[in-house]
Length: 383
Image (cartoon, rainbow, N blue to C red; front, side, top):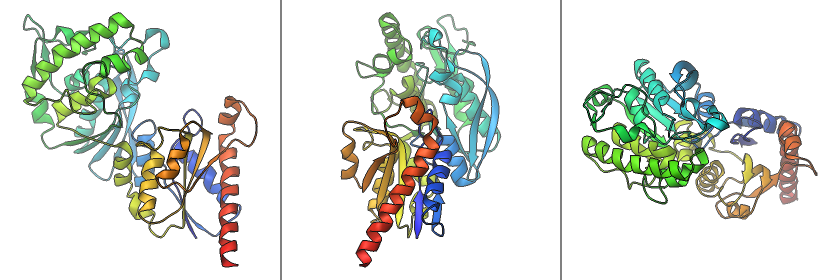
């Protein structure tokens, strides 16, 4: 019997790798001789680097970068499959790096992400996978571009040397991408992006996500004005219009910045992960897949880890059991996309803190019960 264990992380509780180990331990209580294949998963957000490094035999590289407020910090990215690099922008410019009282996307920058990309280039990487979830920024990727060699000038013709932020975007009068184009001419960029927001307008970066990052109404209007201003300059210099491409507004306009400055391609995060970890190949001849994540609800069927796994499994007629910390409204949608059954891991009344603290044991116990039901069904069919 071959069982593939492929969960995402249970945020704030266990990583995808820890969830794999816990589920596998529960399975071995019942089917100790089964072939159990552990594949830590992610959908382009938190945990993407770890998932790809572990599932591809890659390695982590730690670098010194500027954080979202211009402070020095250490961030790690993954080197995988020879010349490929996988980066989570949140490790250099994530909202979690900014104390709550200091959150204001007028003052944050993606400069550290650009430094990580440059380090990857210096290490010989040429194919970049970038997850852009969880940002603290709204700078249209200008900080990133600046670290990669793009030059920004003010109205007096002086180069802006301070890391570009949402506020400094408004002072840019001209852009020179020459050095950056030369630096990345042999590199390719694919971006894990599961939102479809344009850059500007009521559904754009500033209005939709600015308040989540600490922007008040006045700040949102300044950010929107600055974004209108700078994207016109960027598009003229890059020679292409990117503002209306679905996903351009992701991560405070970083989607647009990567499109314009790096000629990036935006893709579903789970599709990228499954391509790099050769998921379709690894589930060949599997009898069962067990996946899971912290919460299953109406959004799960639309581009998250479980949806990608269900789609891949359906093509091979492999049953899928999804484990969840909690099951919310609309969760039944996953049953329409290929999930055979979903099971909450909480065994009785408990607080969220208790569930998160005991997640590994709860996962193991639920996996044990799931495989017992599967084996019972197999026995019944034989009879």
